[in-house]
Length: 107
Image (cartoon, rainbow, N blue to C red; front, side, top):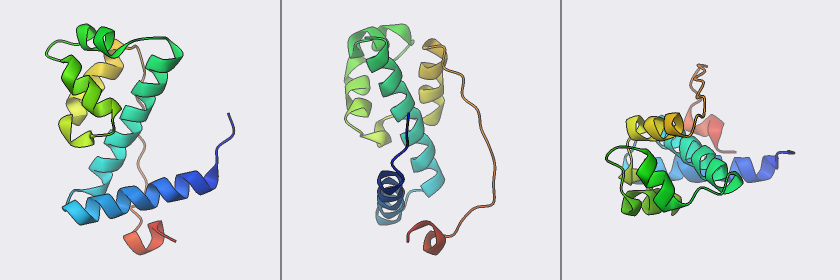
């Protein structure tokens, strides 16, 4: 699937601005956003409803699933998002690189 670079730049800028505005670690916001996007895309592709997803993970309610599907990333921890990806059989890979400063991220 082709990637729209301008869309990615806008999203990156928005995440950076969001994290700075609310005093949240940018990397946490970025990781949560990426996990949520992957979960949402997987559920859409495989016709998994929010209720079905909630039933697949211990302690996960439909209300919390609904909130993350709305983009409210503060309602879910990275740990819980990883539990969800595990329940969906999604492999998560972590990579490391030198951190770019906000002046480098936002053009």
